Length: 141
Image (tube, rainbow, N blue to C red):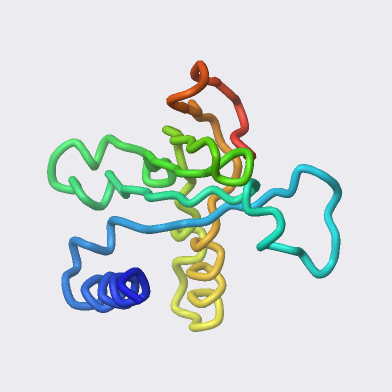
């Protein structure tokens, strides 16, 4: 209940305080086996990665943000391995696709915001307390 309240609070505060719109939570899910329909998110919990991204271009727009590419954002991720027995932290990049959908049309705005909920595979470093760091071009799980 506390995390649900915190999630609602984050959304509420982002609507009221414009600087908080530069911080987002995203999600990625790619199952290790084959894709099945309907997806079984609860049985493939090891394949989830939860991301926290920062829009440096918007956050520091008046200083070095104008030199930072608008579509690249740093990201921190969290996932588990072996049914939660090993926690993994990920440092990587995220792609900000919202400028592609920056139109006056309400439908394009909705599509852009929906797509922005998901993190697409990108380069990163996976760090775990019980294993050596793993460097990958595409972090999938």
